[in-house]
Image 1 (cartoon, one colour):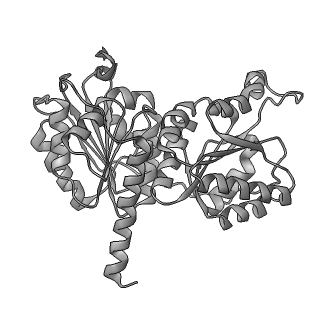
Image 2 (image 1 turned 90 degrees about the vertical axis):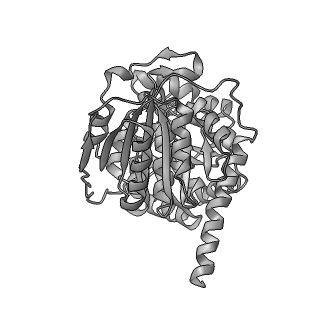
Length: 386
């Protein structure tokens, strides 16, 4: 079908933010999204789900595009981010390995189980029709699901979209401007002390995102606030979520609080963050060299130079923070000067005893954050008189 006309129907329904990973079956729709919409090229499909999910929370109707082989890469955020937070994503997943259609051997099994996998994840789906008029009706049905806070995926067969040339792309180049390595002893505070320091300098324009495990639970105990979001799953996706939120809410200060185990799981996100380079995002890594939430097993973070890696990925500033006072000073400076910033801090393995879990459900956390964002927009309108 006519890719441009299908894209125009998406636009009419308000879909304006796309993230994905290329597939030959989807290349023409991806080209259209790059040409006409806000499109973020993710390092992997799970990151794309997290980026698009955050854009939705930030007020944009979003969609993800991926090959079905990458659907397995997206299982974690689809089941532990999209599902518990009730995030209604529109998805397009290709059907490589369709039974009866010759294809590469690595697609054979996935071709048989793609739709079963979607059903297991409670994702409504349909095969996208190659007939434009029928596809329009399907989009209306999909939009009803989205409006009802439910995700909906189209399974796309070979030859569904006609040719859409990719316009000349202008590659942006972001280079590191400030890098500060370790030059004195590390204070090695407990994580809850570092979180308390971070929380102490937040203001009404700040949104704090805490990674999976004890990081979110400790931040919740320090102060549960409407501008906090606690990741309860989708390990490794917090900075991709931060990227999507920073791009969709450029007037907010997005503070991403990450852990070494989490970041190591999806380090490709650093390159994506550096490329899109939102100046309203700061990425703080609290490194205790352990999967501390699951029993203290060691990570390999002691062997990694995160400051150099973030700098090489295009973070504007990449700084080793030695103590709590440095941490607060860097946060205050970032608020004034902005620029995509990476702060690295070594912490101890100590955590609070009898640590509680958030007493608010994930979807309530999401809805509360959305109200916080909307209320700020309403205040701005009142001030502007518009």
